[in-house]
Image 1 (cartoon, rainbow, N blue to C red):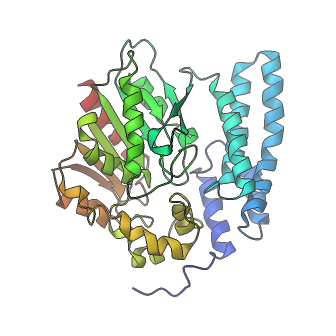
Image 2: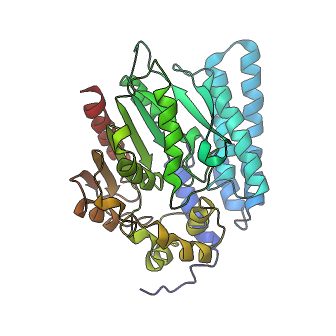
Amino acid sequence: MTTSYNPAAPRPMDEVRENMLERARQPRNPFNFTNFEEVAPVIKGLQSTDRDAWAVAFSALAAPYEEKAARAEEAGDAKEAKENFLIAYDYHHVARYPAANSPGKLDSYRRSQENYLSAARYFDQPITRVEVPVPVAGGNPAIWFYRRPTGVERPPVVVTWGGIDSFKEERHQDAQYLDAGLATLAIDMPGVGDAPISGSETGERLWDAIFDWIDGQPDLDNTRVGIAGGSTGGYWATKVAHTHRDRICVAVNHGGPAHYAFTPEWIARAQRGEYPLELAETLASAFGLSTYDEWVEYSPQLSLLDQGIIDEPCAPLLLLNGVNDSVFPIADMHILLEHGDAKQARFSQGAHMGGGGLGWAGLAWLKQHLLG
């Protein structure tokens, strides 16, 4: 396959603006709590995708909401404080999007975390920030967010994570798990957020520490553990479902890659698909790399087919995606169905990750296996 553009060149700014405006209008990641009337002028005013300029432009929108949240806290207005902290968090989140891969974007990420944890003080099921040394990271810690459902003595637990641009702070759907009676442990997949290791051909070793931590919690049922990874995180869900099948009951891969996504032909095509900017570069950053060319050279090593992983036994695994995904090919879901143990799948006519309805299918699958 050939392309009519240079995939290693920056995406034209008019295409980036159009994509980001459409995401903000819907709203869709990374615009979770933002105001379209406020972000639209900033998007239209950007002259390039310079990372630090991007971070400054969007983080500037957060300041008034940080001030409103502080005043609300002083007045004892929990609802107002939470709402404004969440808006401030999300402006900093957009500022670091898609990856915290420059000094300015890293600063925006840390500020987004501060505001998110401030908002989380007012959640119905509060977040416990867990910091655990990870042996494969030389004892450096991982940071996870742990939440428990109300009124359940020893609940099952779902370990959840996103992809290259959606970190533990973006696991907003975890509230659905909690309402169903499931505890949640929101983590960062290798190479993003606060993960202590980069992605690699052996990045699944990170989950040893995760499952060990769960085993050490007497108020969790470690015989009923599920995992759910979204987007690029679905790659790790598939791999862990095979490599750690004896430590989990069920797994969900929601929109992840497996084999064809790592070919030069697909990488070139996807670079100007639905993802708004720097897809290959953002994927590269999760694996300790930087450039388009570095990703093209390295990524074939990640093929789960070539590694032989998908021909091994695996835990019950549900595959979810849209058949019109232009980030990762639907053929990657097909190849998972063709190899190894039988799996279940549900596809929609949507684009990447297939739309919100598939998320409910994932929740139903987890409830079926973990709650009976």
